[in-house]
Length: 215
Length: 260
Image 1 (cartoon, rainbow over the protein chains, first blue to last red):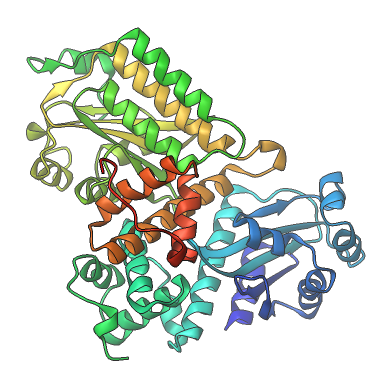
Image 2: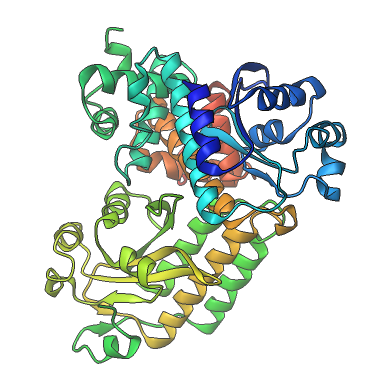
């Protein structure tokens, strides 16, 4: 599923490759997926070298947008990485953290063989793909069917605050990580066939407790 | 659709709100510019800004929304973090003064909401039900782009004085500058990335509010007050406190109310 998302993203974003790396909070690398073999290699490179925009994007929790890898900034920041990827013809790289608040699972990278910044629309689309990749990673951990991912994190706008509050509450109820709390909330909504924001509201109103729900 | 400032003032018998003193105003702007240092706490600054704007627009509540990458308005800060205010901001993704200000880039005002149900048939009953009778929405502008809106809710059907309208708009402009400059622009980050970070910071704070509310058996509104007080008294950024709460709540001592 992640590879499918990478392939769809590379077509939509008009780059030369898209890769997703799944990382744990302590920076250890998990699975990763890519739109093609070269991108797969490029993704692997930064973990071999221990430096690169995906790692930085994950650690700083911010998009890292490098419109020209030949520039001094990139060369100073990641000397080995820049040398290695430019040897493969890559001229620009854009990395986006996969995160919801403090819950983070990895990073999505868009590679381009042409230097130049991303337009506003492409940037917005890339953020959307990062969100899809994030929900896919979480849902696969929660053993939810693939089609559920397509619904995204927020089935309707304007409920983010409530969803996030409920995630924090469930985290404490179950004594689990915030990512795990998010997975449990989504799994519950899926099992009950209810919209996420209703489940979240019940948690906030103390009508639903996850430590009293049978798994 | 959008009232010009002059037409608001022609509008009639409502009481004008008092203007803030020049001394107080100077203090407010010094306080805010003092905060604009390296790696400052954006959400905390925006919270302070909404509190000061509420002070300028006497007896009102001020909220701030930013557009996400879908163009949807998301809550970021409010002078009073109450569920009813969050809701009033959030329902404006369908209709309301914030959405109008965001779309037109112009100031939107209605100083007697009871008569405005034709203008916003869904928003007005919600607002009046929450005790709100006047509303201003100031666009957050950055160059040619509108990135969000600052919403002033008044408990009475009242209007702002002309100079106060200018002051609140200046505060809205200051919020836009703060969002763009949270991180040095030399890093080449774009506005969309900055907005994304601001919105995600807000999500982290909401997660922490939920965690504290659950642990201490209090409302999420109260959890925010306690977290902010804890950040102040331990000289930490609100966002850092929120991250610690979410990542390792056991390391955070039980939080007390500000007056205890």
